[in-house]
Each structure stands twice: as structure tokens, then as C-alpha cells.
Length: 59
Length: 244
Image 1 (tube, each protein chain N blue to C red):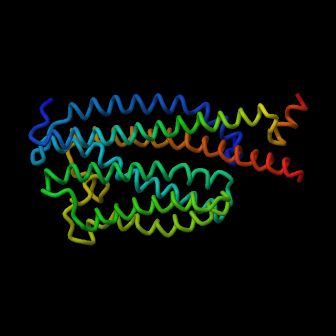
Image 2: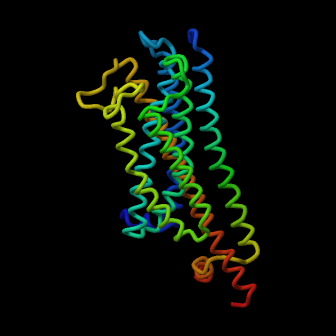
Image 3: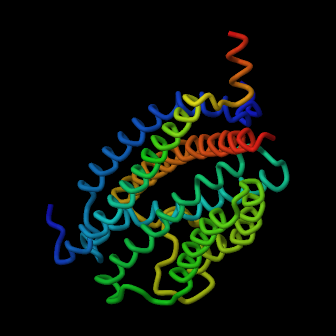
């Protein structure tokens, strides 16, 4: 594919878009892992929400 | 399931957890199809291959405004209906909106240099989009400034609704003022002004970016709900430690 005399600008624009999308995906995935980790740590120490405690008693 | 049931964060987590893999797959497919269409699209008779920047610039421009519009509806949900997920939705959308507005600005600059001979000009369209980007940063800063989530949500909601005034300014800036930026060529009265060989790849890429936003937004909303649960549990732990 011939991108002509302005190839650097075209490739640069797509590289920036790719970087921004990758950062967004990484942010969501890393944040998800972090929140899950903190929640499971808290639950392991017996700190749970009242609704979860009552659900646990019912089961 | 009635729509109101989604207001329950636990039900939202369950439903979004089932939806996310399908949305991710649809996003990947749309991007694969879109990129193939872009590669096969003809060069513009005036711009040459540089027109290919448009396939990422225009969808990010549309989404930057759409996301602020979504945040404005969520702001109404926070202020008027006090919907439990409204401020979660607004907070999760803001970083995505900021990133896509940045993408719009940078790709526009990289298109402008070879086509206009300059990266930047202070015309109505470019300046109003820069203002939108700064407003996104302001919203993100405000979320971090106020610790209590419901108080922060109300302050951000007011700022978001005030900022919504900028959306028609961005849209009509090319009609109201003499600008270097070209007028609307897709969303305009009288229909699109571009050939289908360029319009179809553009619409496919717009769909791909829209699906990407939906996927990221659902993921970020799930993270925000978990973050609030963590906060609640830590407050409970602090209360228990203090013997309250």
C-alpha cells in the first residue's frame, strides 16, 4: 500500500490511536484486577457487606 | 427483566459480566472489518492517502461529543432522579471521553500539517474541541478533589450540564464562523457529501469505535462499582476498629 509523501503523518496518526486505545484497555483491565484483589483480601479478613453475610447465613 | 432492575448494582454486575465477552468479540470483529475496508478504500482525489487519517479522526470526534452527551444524561440522572448507577456511568465515561478527544486533537493535527501547512490554528472548531478536552480534564480533577462519591457526583453533574453548552458550539462552529476546518460532510441536511467508497469504511470504523466505547464503559463501570464496595468495606473496617 503506497501512502504517498505524507506516510509519516498517516502512520503517526494510527500509532497514536493504537497507543491511546491500548492505554484505555490496559487501564480497565489493570483497575479490574486491582479492585478484585482488594475485595478478595478484605473478604479473606472477614470484612463483607451485610447483604453478603445474610445471604451466607441463609445458604 | 424490567429496565429499573438494572439500577441495582449487583444485577448490573451480573448482566454486564455476561454481556462483556460478546461486546469485546463484536468490537474486535468490527475493527478487523473496518481496517480491511480502510486499506481497500481509494485515496481522495485532493488529499491522496492522507485522507486515511479521517477514518480514525472522525469517529473519535463524534465519540468525544457523544460521550459528553452521555455524561450529561447521567448528570440529569444524578441530580433529578438520583439513579444509583448514574454517577457511576458518568465517572466511568469521563476518562474514555478525555482519551478519545485527545485522539481527535492529535490525529487532526497530524492531518492538518500536510493539508493546511500547520498543526494548529485557533479557529472555532479546533478551539471548541480543545475546550471540550479541557472540560474533560476538569471533570476528572473534580472527581479526585471531593472524596465523598455522592457529593463529588453532584458537583461533577453541574459542571457536566454547564459544559454541554459546548456541544452545539462544536457542531455548528464550522457554520457560524469562518474556519479552516471543513464543514460537516456526513451529518448534514441533504445527506452525506462523500462517495460510498469512502463513506462505508468511515461508518464501519465509527461503529467499531462505538463498540469499543461500550465495552470499555461497561468494564470501567464494573470497576467503579467494585471501588465503591471497597470504600464501604474499608469504612466498615475503620468503624469496627474504632469500636463504633
